[in-house]
Length: 151
Image 1 (cartoon, rainbow, N blue to C red):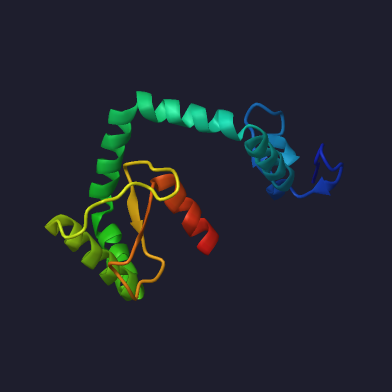
Image 2 (spheres, one colour; image 1 turned 60 degrees about the horizontal axis):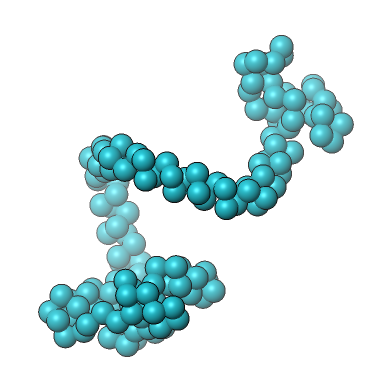
């Protein structure tokens, strides 16, 4: 048994993360309180964290690319099985996207700029997968936002 310093409650040792720097080898905050503390930190420093991650990705592009390629090679069968399963579970959506991409490659559909902010780099959003060629043109930011509203 150990006391969580945040709630001042006695808890089982298994409810604490390991910390080799501590005498008993356990963190002084229980997992639940630590999780809440981490969540508050992420909410309070959201922009700083985003900038730090962006800077890391920019300075380590090659390293990230090599790690991704290595991961893909080591997990190729599992990834392919996942994609195949996803395709069959979302057949209507997959076919609509495939048909849409075919028409873009063929030149029958020309990319437009974002309908919200006029960003030239845009993606086609399907309001209804029943009409695969009827799309709304959105930049990545607005497309992600649209899907977060839909779900």
